[in-house]
Length: 66
Image 1 (cartoon, rainbow, N blue to C red):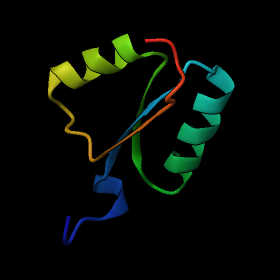
Image 2 (image 1 turned 180 degrees about the vertical axis):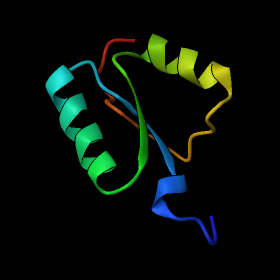
Image 3 (image 1 turned 120 degrees about the vertical axis):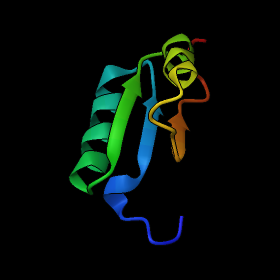
Image 4 (image 1 turned 90 degrees about the vertical axis):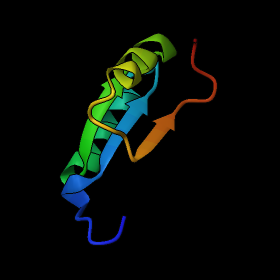
């Protein structure tokens, strides 16, 4: 990711706890990241299947429902 600004980095945040998801995504957006969210694995997979944007980082709750 050489010569990439933070605004060019796409992050997908996945968590079934809405408050945690909101805090995480708001914090990343405040730092300049492009952030998408998903409330479960099914929605995350749907976003990934679209192919755009291509995510540079996925942050997921390991204990969330699938």
